[in-house]
Length: 519
Image 1 (cartoon, rainbow, N blue to C red):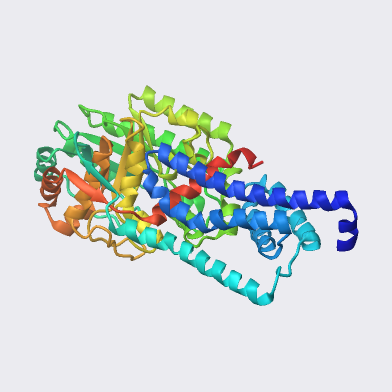
Image 2: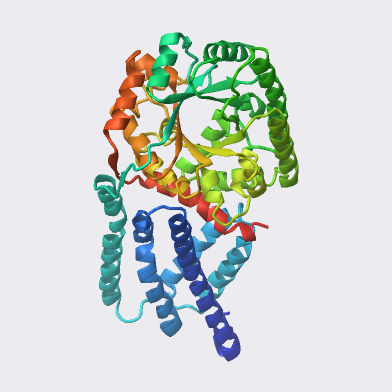
């Protein structure tokens, strides 16, 4: 076969050209992905320095691939190029489970592998000893270049890469959980002393209701009674029991029926909330009524386990099945209906969504944000958009504290979007979640207040804190005033780097830049 192709000059020339073009295409695709991710991350407010480890991770390839391609084009060197095609084919096979357009790239690589095997030169040119020495030098150089990635991650994790000073203090809101969510419910009595402290220390409260729990509505009533005719500002967050709706071991991160059911329950909850307010003759409506559209705890664990374990097959299958099980027109209709109904009741309406929604907004289309029941059109409906950036929540699933970079990175993006975009952070305090895991992220008030300073320094105008109950449990009745004093005392803070968070964001940006060939 090899002799026949080489004897046929045209076939040999075109085979050689085809393999060369496929090698160049693979290299350009790597470069395009690097540039696109870096560009969109930079456009979202993330510093260019943050993308340095990613560039250094690919640096060995970007140096050696042109040399390998040149070697094949001039002398038909095959061994290293065959391995490159094999690796690319493997990646394309895995990623095509999510991005169907990459099947074409997979086919090209498979054909190129066959042609390279037939027409390429696998035996080293010159003596075996000389080739061995040359190969050893390449391996050593490749490993030395490969060290630049972990070294850069360590250095950026130790040396501050960002410093901010607060010019306009953010409004601070303490969440009051009225049921068990990620952490067990703890009763906080809204007595006069507590409310006076909150007012004096310039905090507002966010009353978070589990809409399917009658006890949660009863507790809301007690807080509304206590707040009536006081100066304490408040908002209400309505959270459905998405865990029960999605199941204990979800195969999908949202479906059309699930999201429609969530919106329907929110619609009914707005009626219940208005009744609770009217029956008490409340002198003030909530500043905002937020609809919780974040993933359930089990959905979040499913997503993060695929991401944490670099499970390309699991992640690709999960994301594609989830994304294509959601009808965008249907959720737009549901969202618009709930928003209009809430507005008719006199409420200023908002939503709470996952942090990855920010990384899906860059090219103004709706891909992963649909998991939170949103499109670009529905995002424009709400007076307030709150992004859940719980450092404890990320740290649990990433098997260790993700550091201050989480708040720094996402607040850098939020600060560019306007005052209607807000942030929810936490959990402050030494508490244990519903799975019995201790919260070891924020060991003291100072560390938590530093994250509040980071968010405010990047321009976030309103920050919701999880939670009043965990704060009081940990540090007692004086903790509210201690937190305010710490925030007011420190108006400058520096931040270090966490590659895990950058990589998490980069994954969603990368998915978004290939959405046009998802098919």
